[in-house]
Image (cartoon, rainbow, N blue to C red; front, side, top):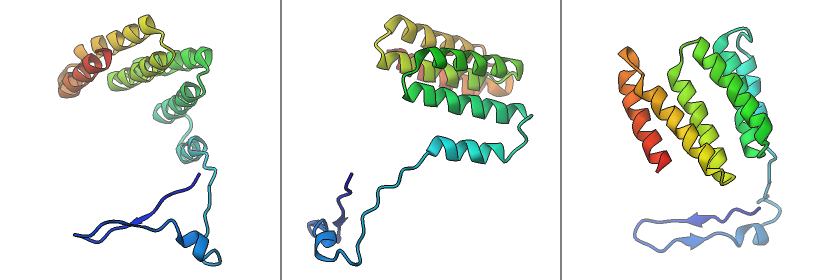
Length: 150
């Protein structure tokens, strides 16, 4: 992986700086870090109380998104169910919708269109039933679910 750098001055054409590492290898170094962002986010999350439902949800959701990235569909479904159960227990409808959005986009990548529609339909119904302090959020999430479904 190589990054291309441009130096821009207002009113002038950008000047490519790709030649710099070749011309000055003793002072300009290219690094390609291998960052485990999921691991970092888990480490930060674990700094909190692991018995806290919010921490538990965050850890499950991180695992869910990792399963989505790696296209481990069985694990994704299992973790999605766990996230949804915890979000229901805690009365977090917005997080239920977030889980369904993650599942829907993953099913879309696999071209499992009935599952895509089912996920976004669930998200829409949950958002539609959000009332009280959640009502404004619910309206926004309904719109997002409709656009995602389209």
